[in-house]
Image (cartoon, rainbow, N blue to C red; front, side):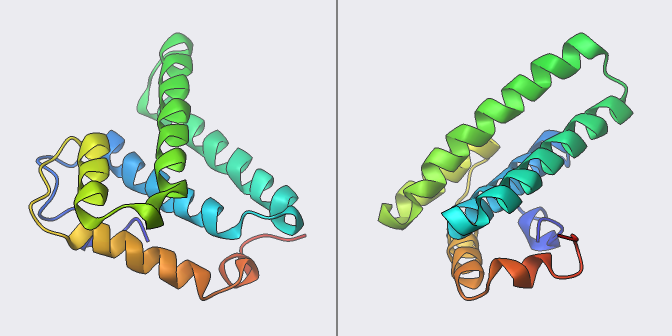
Length: 141
């Protein structure tokens, strides 16, 4: 979902890793919020661990040193928990508040309701499917 070109074409001044990561973290937060329950706890923890391990590997591939990687990972994980906190309350926000939340993380001026509506629709799509629907063929139990 984060590869949707419509997310990037009008909203980002330049296409950088951190902006793409923020979009991924928003998608991931909605995913975790939708499927969080006791039955899915272990699977979601494994997905979380895998995602952040892959993020660390991606940062290493860019060429950063160990100290920088640790600082960046701490920043990204803290950002993710801030996003998760906002996403947890997403349905209680008005469209204007949702736009403000997205602007604060993406550091862009969002003049339309495209992104808030996009994430509303994404959340609805997630809730209309099961966790297995998204994992089928991706992981082995």
